[in-house]
Image (tube, rainbow, N blue to C red; front, side, top):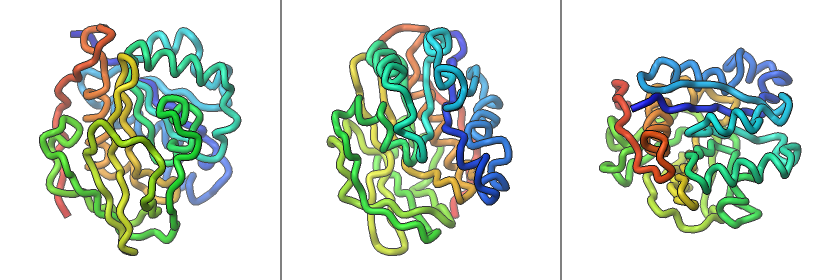
Length: 244
């Protein structure tokens, strides 16, 4: 069984223009995630950012990607439509896609889910989030307890204007009382898509071991098996976590 080829894509704008974000992710959100994944056996990891030629998503890079992670926020409209279409076609052909946090507003998320809004409630007060595992037997929840507690996060609340997920793995609760479908699985063509909500740039969410475990699990779940077009997922190694 060959290595899973992972590409972590990021706008890489906040980190270069906001000192607070840069202090949390000095090398970018993409590098924080990639640095973790590079330590996981069975993964081969690359990164790409918006301001590279073809947004870093050249034909060669996409052809050599089994799972693409997508973090976007400020510059959804700057992603060229022809690149979005190439990514969409790769997903339909079997590439896995993990859309993180504000990526719900990205062109690729809208293209694949058939929604142009992804509307939701939000409040950026740095609240406690409790991310409840509602499908503990799902591969993406492997190695987790009943919930993940995030000390400070941006609130996203329902109604989240998305199609009903094929599988719902996580539901969030926030201090203000709102809830949110935070771990949504879909199948599009031969590919798998996982939307995972946590990850506001102003908080060190991608340094939290449980969050990185979910992302790792998501990569193994979304990956094609032995290069096959149809993906049934592989077993992710467990990183020990401490339940709060």
